[in-house]
Image (tube, rainbow, N blue to C red; front, side, top):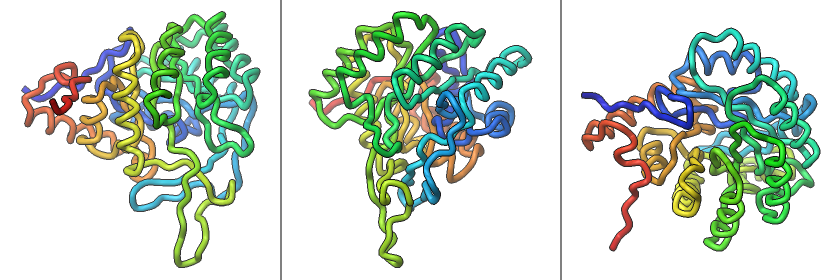
Length: 316
């Protein structure tokens, strides 16, 4: 019997745990439709939205490099109403059950509260992801590196938001920070966390031109791809060990093969998001990664993901 990648995530069942990372292949309705109907992704997520249309940072703002990518996008998106209209129309007319996640990333606390109030009052019945880790907006710090502010925002959000909510987190690099953030997250009825967003403020240099490769922020940008997989795995593992079991984990960072997916699941992830590789390869990557993951599971005689999820071994 071939490996079964069916994944249960709260009240939804997915054909596999793969989905896009917000920001990649999800700007327009056309791209979202392709993920929905023409890809083997088990689920998909909208572009992180701001209350109004946002052009984003000046180009070039994304650059593909041999081991990943660097970007300083600046939250380009078509505005909250564009994506809400899409998910509500799809919800009313779709006959399939590929789940959709809705991502919001306001430029202020007020922005986030405004959008979450609208989602709470709407008919949307999917998952909402609050992005607390936008490193590429000039002059704005990452909210999730300010623990007091994170606590304040989540306290305000859960005073009124009753639908399933997850948060997108930046990478953390210190055990004390894992401990502190987990102690905050465990205070709330979160559905999940998503870790990690890109590693912020990296720099890539074109030696021929002796220049940086992205224009915003004098070339500083978020790093993705192979570069960040060890950091992503560490964050998934660290939070899996610290969060209450009802808070699930979406693993994001450096997934370009079935082996990468297997490693994220072994660390404790339930769902998996693909960013840099989706940008490079397009939606066909989901079919390939799915098949490679099945091959690894078949070789190891795993029939389901639950047989090995979160069971990473330490050296005694």
